[in-house]
Length: 198
Image 1 (cartoon, rainbow, N blue to C red):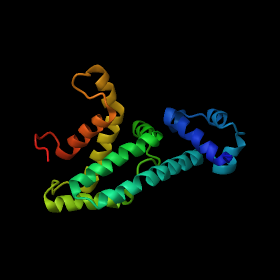
Image 2 (tube, rainbow, N blue to C red):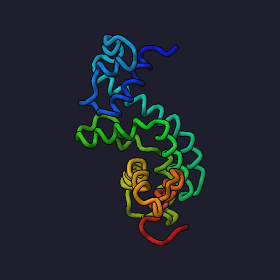
Image 3 (cartoon, rainbow, N blue to C red):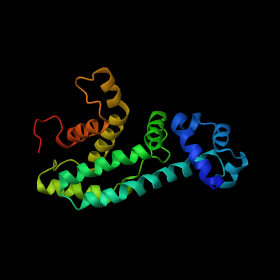
């Protein structure tokens, strides 16, 4: 049996992902959860507390799924290691899809609450791969890791949001297979617009 706190977090994740912090309704969250509204105040204090707890729970789930893949990637050479890390990130966000929705809501509202990690929370394994890749000449030496990480998140979010839709409009050019779409996006990130593929 699930406790009311976990049930509320699951219901809140869905509601916040659909409507963002401002648009989400406490009444809808408790309806989804099947609990009394006072349980929100008991467990989280208020709607803001529920939102922050929801983000922390989604980040925990994301980390739990991505961390073993990052450890695997860290043992690889830089280019295949970054590829493996990105494959794992795509798989993770398939399992925790609310994370991207919440990031987009926060960006659109201009109110960054807590969905994006701070600079000291970026994955150390990915940073180490980036630095090793720079030292080996695989990655541009003058690009800070934070910029590369932003590009990674951009490619992951845009592939998730746009590429499937583009495949509907242009099926002869854009691959319909989701795994293939991701590999093409990862290639774009790793090699940019150049014709070089290695």
